[in-house]
Image (cartoon, rainbow, N blue to C red):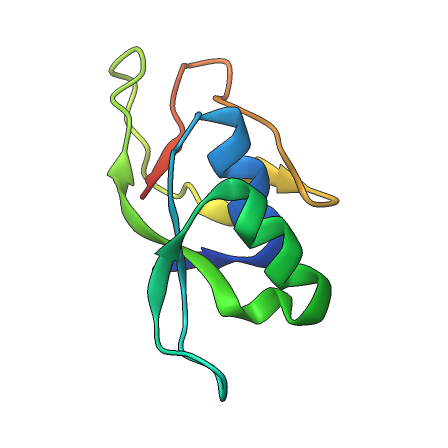
Length: 93
């Protein structure tokens, strides 16, 4: 399981989950900081790898378990797909 999602996937997840802030790595012009969704969209136009969210765990869903699940399976083409049929999805923040 990836410990982070970056770039377009991070923005898609934040937008779908109404997260107020994402994280930005330090770059040559400024240090690391939290950014709003609008700021993150501007930043990824220059460098998508600067924007990220940390993996925090899984939702419980219907209790069927999440062994073998991978966070990347919940994204396609820079779009967050949402929970699976069991209501299980990764949590990032």
